[in-house]
Length: 224
Ligand code: ADP
Ligand code: ADP
Image 1 (cartoon, rainbow, N blue to C red):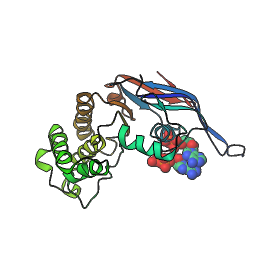
Image 2: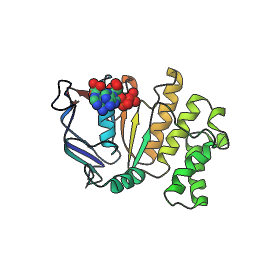
Image 3: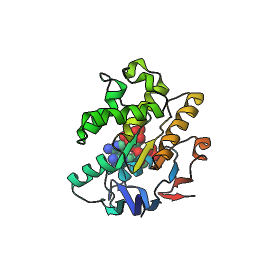
């Protein structure tokens, strides 16, 4: 079954007032296991709203949100939080790493919060760091890493709890073009190796073309 399935998603802000704005208008999206989808959305078109709904951080007014076949659009907060922790990984434009912890600890901590034993969490963190070429940076704090290195650590953290779906919002948006390219390649390698599904918002058409499918958000709907 699809890892993410959005059906008939509507989101209207300020309903019934003069400021009413229909951001999503019956949007459908299905992402299969291992499929990587680019989301191209000019600012103001509803990209954040869509990612928040897919990420179970916001609820649609109408429509269904299913993760791995389970309808979670209006499930209890407890169930949605559990699904966010176990099934979803998030990456943003800015790394949001904890500054007082090392790269390795930043990847270990979310696993401990999920009940993984420390030894296993550390070994998984090291293997992720090695895969993105940061084996020798494990004991550095974020401030001692370059922007591209910080972002690669953030990718490892997003994958720490072995999610089914990665949601990324401009994951290389604050890096210079050359760094952006290698860091994006590292992300794609990680995603492919773990057979992860992904929805990756980007303004960079060159990066978008390297994904399995490119969808544009336009008029509250997605188009190829
Ligand atoms: P994007 O991420 O593409 O810039 P957003 O999803 O953040 O778009 O917002 C789409 C539109 O909805 C914008 O016009 C924005 O101002 C409006 N909007 C977003 N969130 C809210 C909200 N909580 N209340 C009212 N309007 C909102
Ligand atoms: P970003 O996408 O930059 O991380 P947000 O998702 O917080 O930021 O907001 C995106 C857009 O939605 C912005 O243009 C913001 O002004 C608008 N927006 C967010 N929350 C509200 C709100 N409560 N009321 C009106 N507009 C909002």
